Image (tube, rainbow, N blue to C red):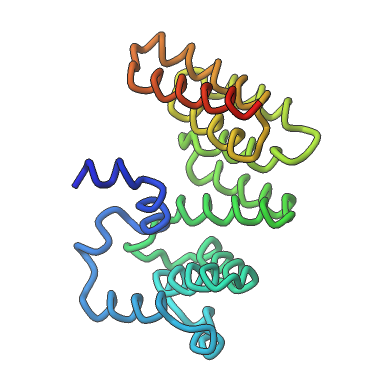
Amino acid sequence: MIDDIEDNYPEYLADERGYAWDAWDVLAADVIRRHDAIARASADDLAALDPAGLDDLDRWAFARASRELMDLDGFFDAARLVMASSDEHRGVSYAEVFISAIEALSDAGLGDEASLHLRTFRERWPEDTQAARLSVWIAARGPDLATSLEDAIAELMDDAEAMFEIGEDLAAIGASEHALTALDAAAALADTHGLRALLLDIALLRADLAATE
């Protein structure tokens, strides 16, 4: 099972993000069935639903289904409701909902709103290193990328994995020079902590970047 997850991690992450790790073990069967019906709904079926009348688990199913159907407005509307909710559902990972929404808002050119949600994310989960990564994500297509990356390197002085994730993000959008800066910082931390597997991942990504130059 673990090997399967590692071999297909992007798909696993896409399938599970936003859900509590034990969600499917603790939720009642009828709750799961209702969620699954919304998650597989057609555009017409989603149009007949009002996410404001759903609980957070079903809102997240609505959001994900909308995104699969390329309806970003539907995704954002439902995700905003989940992020603003005061009636938390045990099946939802609220930090991961924030992460998904912040990334999507930034990608859609709504960087100001993404930054507002990032501020809330930092307040609710002050120890979560994803905040530094998200700061770089928001800045990645603008003039403040170099400064944001410097700030992230300073913030993540003891987290090689998070620095590597930033390098991966930047490599994925073609910001090779900044990606290499992030990878250099990740490599220094990984070397300090003897993280040999991570050092190999860094070397492989560096080779990929060199091959595309």
